Image (cartoon, rainbow, N blue to C red; front, side, top):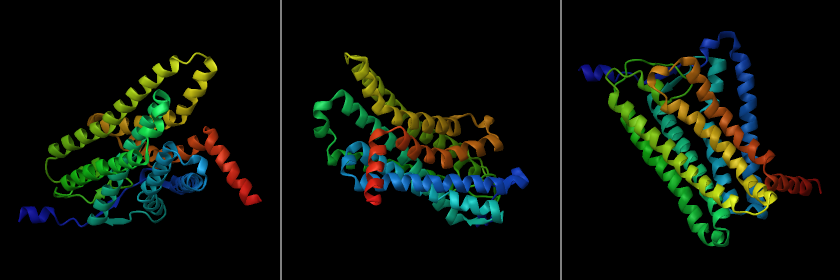
Length: 309
């Protein structure tokens, strides 16, 4: 009977940005603007890559997959967050919360491993240029993309199953979406096992891709140093700067958010970090790859030129 009383919770309510009081309308305008720019930027990148045959290469195939993943990633979080800034205290069902967390975990982990695949692509292109087309064939690209999604799916099933097997007593989530720690705090029982599962999974999906990317770039740097001319070295490394910029920001935010000690958690800091990796980071992808990548800029110019003609 006690167990049945625990499971009476059927919905949650997000506190969201209520701590900011009268500034919520300002936040709504800012977040809506960033969200529109993010959607527009990622859609433009995917469209340009699809229509421009110059960009039909493994690197841009991975980029289009990353942009598509981040578009869906923001869709499952930001619209509800924006509506809560206006309507306040909107409830979400237990099933809806589980679905949101499930999709969030899948896509977040998928993005981590897609960035790893892009790092591997840069390694092969620079360190093994003569075998690039043989190694990075369509089968390899498809396997890397499916593997990224598959790892995310397995981890999401593990996370959500462990989380929603818990009995909940509270209904107020001190966050703006169904993230792992804020929902875990509402449990009536000890969550040590869930915390261990979360830490192990987080460590795996952050440290393993980061390690693989680091190894790739160490090998890339060794290859670049063998190039005789400084101009050649600079030009070769320039092909990696966009990817490296996204990697640093993405893994930096993820590491701080999910690997920091639990004792250091605070509502304000957690909200700021969550906003960074759910709103700002997805915008970084189209901005970096459109402003710092000559091939993408040339493709955009060609597309605009054709439309004007």
